[in-house]
Each structure stands twice: as C-alpha cells, then as structure tokens.
Image (cartoon, rainbow, N blue to C red; front, side, top):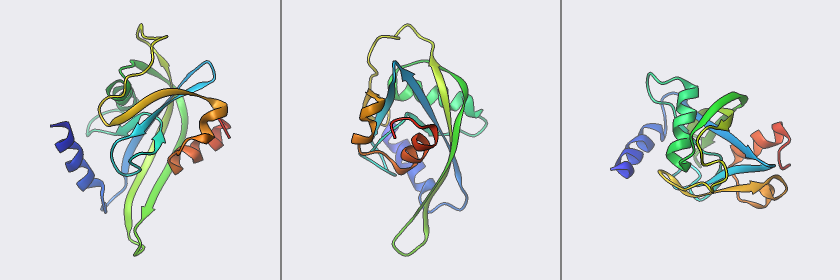
Length: 155
C-alpha cells in the first residue's frame, strides 16, 4: 500500500507542471549527522537527510517532524530553518523532469530514544548517524551536498 502511494506521488512529481515543496531535517548528535539511504527516485540509492513531501494543508514544520518519524522512528521538534535548496533536474532532452523547493530544518530529538540507533522505515533503505568528517565519503544527493557546503558541515 505504501509503495502504491509512493508510485502515485512519483507520477505527480515526474515532469511536473509546477514546483513541489519538500522538507528535510538535520538531526545532529555529537558531531554526527543522521542520514538515510533513499529507496525511491529521484536519487534512489543515494544518501540524504530524512525528509519528504508536504501534504496539502500541512505546515512545513509539521511535515518535517512527520517525515523524521516515518523514516527513522525518531520524534523531533523543529528548532530553526537550516536552508532552502532548489532542486531542478532535467532529462536528456532538456525538459524539467523534477522540480522541488526543499525547506530544511535543524531539529532536536524529543522521544526517549536519544541513544538508540535510527530504524530505516517508510521510504528509507538504511538510516544511520555519520561522523561529520566521513560524510563526504558517502554517495550523497546533489541537494544535500549543496546544503552541507552552505552550512560548513562535512565539507
């Protein structure tokens, strides 16, 4: 059922008529950043931060907190905006294949799983905390590289 929903969402976002809004969270624990390995396109198999799409009628902060829980099992609270990234991907013919505006937030963990590892769930293949100095060794999404360079984390 979740996979069918993801396929329908992909179809809506693939060759869009307008940009789509996405959210991401930066959960930092002792100079380690929480990363997930993406299960679906765009960027399937790449490492990124937990995040996803904004539902109609949903506030962006609520969406960020929801996506963190869905993908990792961690309850979080948004603390501040980390950065906005425009992700525009073109196909070989020059047509816009994907267009996202990504609002990324720093978050604090609020549940009692402070010392527990994340659990990859929903559309994440894997989830783990990665030391800042090892982040650049991972195959990351271009949008995450752009964000981390702006924030001077790992690059």
